[in-house]
Structures are given as structure tokens and as C-alpha cells.
Length: 468
Image (tube, rainbow, N blue to C red; front, side, top):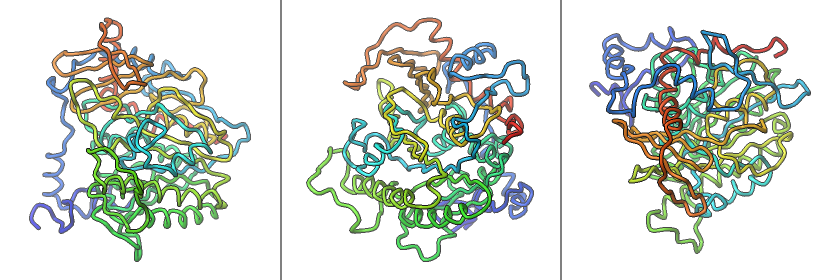
């Protein structure tokens, strides 16, 4: 086994032996030599100038942040300068359960009504029952980026994901920590190995009571290279949510699918393509993988809507990222386009055409769940009528900022471009870059690094109102 310390598909990392919400307990199984070597190889590296357009001054970062989102931002707090006040959407005073169904790679490319191919009929069917976003964008092209954006509202940039970085392994204001403070029970479910991308360690250190992964599935019906099938995942999820609902606390659950992942190994006989051929760049197995992921999701939601826990629960369905994103001559903003849907008895069905981002989900979910207080998030509550239409995207040392129909792109070594977007044609027209827009874009590219280094997204900055 050597340095891998494992016979599995992936080498050992600290997340592999994380089993407790106590960092001290999780450190015991690791030998000191391994820990030292791992820490060195995965240390928080400074971002070099060849990976960023330019480093920004603090005042320019703050100015860009203030202009990024609509919100009741708190001023005068040096320890928590990105805090914003969020209030409940409903006045009934009741806390809602929250279930996030994070979809592996199921981007708009596979959703017909979003301009893609008709491979997600169940998601399309449920889109008519809830709050459906048609111009929603991922922050990156990897699961770790989707996780940090969806569950921690963290903006993208040249730094590694906070899921991997040392300072955020504990006391990060992930929404699991927020809900834990509010008295919720919290779980994370994944059909594969939760040490992938350091997920298990990060979540156990940040508010998740229990991590349920491949090791916890007894006699699953189907197992692939990436873990148990999505059907197995959702079957156990239904049982877990039923048990949580029978308790005396509200609950939060993050359920992360895995079947729609190369090599797209799925149970036979569930889905077919009938007469649909698809484009030449999509293999039959990949199309079947997308359709199976949608099939399993639809099967679960059909059951959930008939359950006892549905009436007290907010469901959020969102992709972590598009299946494949490639950097080309122009910034591939279309490849960040993903589906997002919010379901619940108190959520009015509607189609939302505003440009929005994964970083906006945490503030929105907190409001829908019925919590109030101050929270360290740079995104915005999409329930606000004055929410700004913008999205931040990052891939391969390149930052994209979409504001309405204007796309600003920053490349390393002070190279930049600005485009006008024509969504119907999925085309771009290059236009002149204004100094004001460039200054703001540079500030936003630096924003994540600034928050991380200063510790401004600490869980200590989460201040719930006493009525919570």
C-alpha cells in the first residue's frame, strides 16, 4: 500500500478517518509522519501573480463586495464586515426542515427547457410545481466548487476550494453550522466515499451531526465505481428523513448524488433513449447516465411529496456544476448554466428568469427556513425584489462575471475582455472595458481570498436572533 495507505480507488486523506464532530478525535487515527507530509502537500498556498489578473487593494475589494448583492449589510463590525441581516420569508414563526438535493454534473445541457437536450423529463415535470430558475449559474467546474458555493455561499476565485483548505475545516459558516446553532439535526448523505474531496472531514467539522456514505448502505441493489446507485441513495434518504421527522427537532439534510459520473455505470432496464440520437459529442452511455439520474430523482420526489415530512420541508434541487467545462477563445459562460428548483408547500410555483448564482442559495434557504439574524454571506436572498442579476464563475485561472447582459473576463497577467451576451444565440460580442467595471471585477476576483485570509466567514459571525 505504501504512501497510499489504502487499497481503494483513492489514497488515504484525513477525511477518510474522520468519524466525529470533534477535530481532536478525528486526528487520533492519523500517524504523525503521514499528517505532516499530507499537510505539506496540501498546505494553503499563496496565489501567485501568474494565476490572477491582479491583486486588489482592500478598499477596492470591499467596494466590489458592497456592490455585488442586494442585502441589509451590517456596517461598523470589524470582525464580521460581510454580515447581512436576513429575516424569515413567512411570518408564522415556524422553522422549516431543509433538504438540498445536490445533483452531480446535471447541468442545463441535459435539460430541454433550459436550451439543452431532453434528458431530464422528471426535473422538467417538477419545475412546474416549484420556484424554477432559468438563468442560474454554477461558480465552477468541480464538485468542491459547487459544494462551497451552495452550502457556504462562498465566492469563486484563484484560491483552492474552502472544502480543501485548512482554516475552514472547523468553524466555517456553512449552513449546516447555521442550522446546528438553530437547534436542527443535520446530516450529509453520499452514495460514494465521503472522503472524496475531503467532504466528510469538512462537514463533520462544520455542523453536520452524521455523515452517511457508502459504508452505511446494507445490501445495496447496485454499486458502481462511484458508489451505490442514486436509487439506493434516495431509498435510504427517505428512511432517514422519515426518522428525522418523527423526532422533536427540525432537520437539515444535504444529499449528494453520484450516478451521473464517468463511467456512467447505472442499473439496467431503468431508462432508455427511444429514438433520441443526441449530438456526436454525447455518448449513449452518458445520455443514459443523465436520464437515470433524473429518473432516480423523480422517483424520490414522487415519494417525498406523499410523505409526512414534505409539508414541513423546503427542498432545493441544484446541480454542482455542468458535466464538462472547457476554456476556449471566449469565456464559456453557457457551460456554467445549471438547473435550480425550490419546492415546498409554501413555495408558490413560478418561473424566475433573473440571472442568479449558487452563492445566493444560502441566504435564500435561511429566509425560507424561518431563521433571522446576521449571517456572513456575500450572496443575496433571492426573495428580495431588488436582488441584483449577476453571477461569478471561475475556471483555470480565469474569472467570469456576468452582470445582466455584460460579461467581464479576467485572465492572468492583466489581460481582460468585456462582452455583450446574446443568450438566444448563445453568442458574445466584444465591447470596450470601462475602468469602473474593470476595477470592480478585480475586486470580486480577490473577494474569496480576502474573506478566507481574514476569517470573515467564521461561524462566530453567525448571530441568530433570540426568537430562533
